[in-house]
Length: 234
Image (cartoon, rainbow, N blue to C red; front, side, top):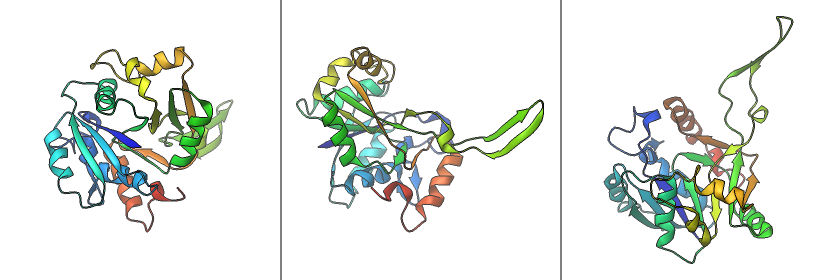
């Protein structure tokens, strides 16, 4: 199977790092975010990647030519103004009859891909999204009649489930994208929901995005450990 990685957005929320490169090319411990995402798949035997580029796509293309790992990587220019749905559809067009993984270029998680595939096949639907708990960003405060009864760090498990990427998509999903300028999240996915063709694979392990400079710094610290958590217990 192949993996589509979305790498064409502007990355405005981490603009300190993205003036000269797309967000998936921001480095974590000396390697682009893209490399870390691909390592999650490669560790589990999946080494064919389609990178959907747009903003500063030449930076991605030049980096692809330097990758020394035995991976098959193809950068596909999906257009500067194309949205996530259009980028996925354009990549799927190049492999029209194949089931594919697809994920964002700014999130890391120790997703067990075999379990994801098994779940998807058992459900028999057109698409599966990995549901994750968002990182706990704020402390928690509980009170009764104005008296604080609990104050401390919020537990990640206290949060609801959100879209964590790491999709598994049947070839027919491309038809659910109606326009290149359409976000996957507000176009194809709601249409799949309406037809009851979208399943959620609940992942309770590590997952973290890189939306802000602080989150980048957090990932830097984790990457310096012997086994980063996005590669642990896969």
